[in-house]
Length: 83
Image (cartoon, rainbow, N blue to C red; front, side, top):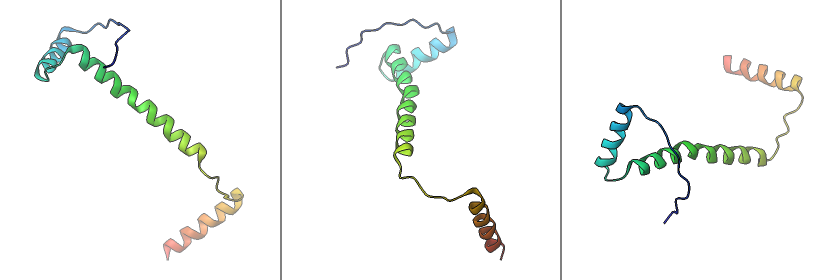
């Protein structure tokens, strides 16, 4: 089981707190557990962003030539598509 060692305090308006409390009751869990789940969902994207960046940076470099050559290739491809 996860050992909870840090305490934090947040301020919520009454309507938000009541909605959170009702949701916790409906799911038979605590308000704190719902808040921790919400924090996990927000932070979840951080890991995927890091993984995506690492995958991109570790990819094999592509030889794409000079900008002028790329421009010519794009123009040729566009001309073929118009036919």
